[in-house]
Image 1 (spheres, rainbow over the protein chains, first blue to last red):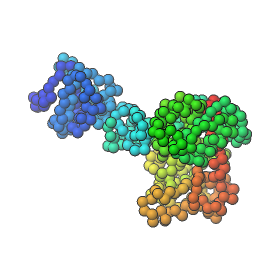
Image 2: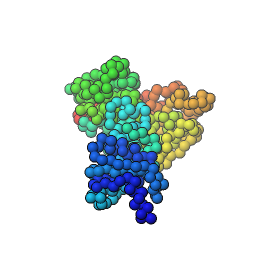
Image 3: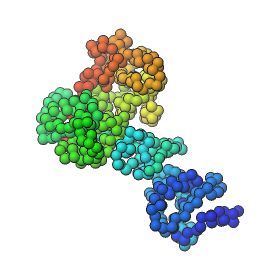
Length: 156
Length: 302
C-alpha cells in the first residue's frame, strides 16, 4: 500500500524546495494554475492531472519550486479547489501541511454574473463578498450587489 | 454623515436614517432656507428620470445651492465615449456633491469610490434607490406617527420592484408585519423573504387584495409592468386584480394610508385621489424634504 502510494506520487517528480498543492479536483487544475498566475512564474512548475486519488477518484497536483504562498494568495483557489492541501517542502521533506480556507472576500479572479453590472462595462477590478451558505458558495458583488453562484462563476 | 456617500440604504445605520427623517421634518416646517448658498450640486442623470431629478433640483434650489448637470447621457460626454471614471472625476472638480442616476447596476458605488466628493445614488439600474426608501420611511412615519410595529401591505409587482425590496429591508428594523399581495409569478424574491425571517418577523402572501385591506396600516401599491409577463393572457388576468378603487376602502382602518412610488397607471383608480387616505402625491412631495435633509447632512450644514 505504502509503496503503491509512493509510486503514484512520483508520477510528478519531487521538488527540493517549494510548495505542493494536492487534492485539486482534476477538472480545476488549469484554473488553479491560472488563478495563481503560475504561467508567469520563472520557477519550475510541475503539474499533473487525472491522477488516481483514494479520496476523490481523480485529482490534480501542482508542484512549484522555490515558492511559498501567503495564505491570502493561495486561498483564492478555494473557489475551484475547496479541499486542496498545501504542502511546504524543504530539502525534499514535508515541513508543513495545511488545507486551503475559503476567504471572506475575493478580488479580481471572477467576473460578475450580472451582464448589467458596472464591472462588465468599465475597466474595474471585480470584488465580491463570499457567502458560505449551506454547502454552496455564493459571491455577492461589491458593486451591483447581485449574487453569483459558484457554479456560474467565470474566471477572468 | 458629513462627506459620506449614500449608495445603498444600508450605508446608513438605523440611527442615521432616523436623523435624516428628523432633519427632513424641519424642512417640511420651513422648506426654503438659504444654507447651501456656497455649494454647487451636480445632478448627473445618465438616463432620464424627470421626477427624481426635479425633486433633487428643487431640494437643492430651496436651500440656495447652485445646480449643474445633465438630464440624459446624450447631452453629456458619455455620448463621445467618455468613461464613467473620467466623467465623475471631471464633474467632481466643479461641484461639492454629486447626485447621479445611471442605467448600469453598481455604477453609483463605483462612482463613490473614484469621486473625491460625496455621491448620492438616485438609482443605479435595477439595484438601489435609497432616497426613495428614505422618503417612503418618512411618509410612513408621518402618517402613522411611528415606524414601529406596523402592518404593511405591498401590492403588485413584488418581484422586480427594487422600491419594495429596499423598503422591506429597511422596515425589518422596525418590527413590521409584511402582507405581500402579488400574482404568483411576481412574488417577493426569496432572498428578501429570507431577510424578513432572519429578523424573526412575519410575512403573509396573498393573491387577493380585498381581504388584506381591513388589516393594514399602509397599502403600498406598485405598478405591474406588462413586459414582465411571458404570457400576455396571464397579464390580462392580473392587470386589473390590483385596481384599487374607492369603494374597496370602506372597511379600512382610520389611520390607513395609501402609498405609491409613482408613476401609476391603472392600479389606483382616480376616485381614490380625493379620499383623505390617498397619500401618494404628498409622498412625492416628502421626497423633496428628505433630499434637502440628505444634501444638508452630507454637506455638513445640518
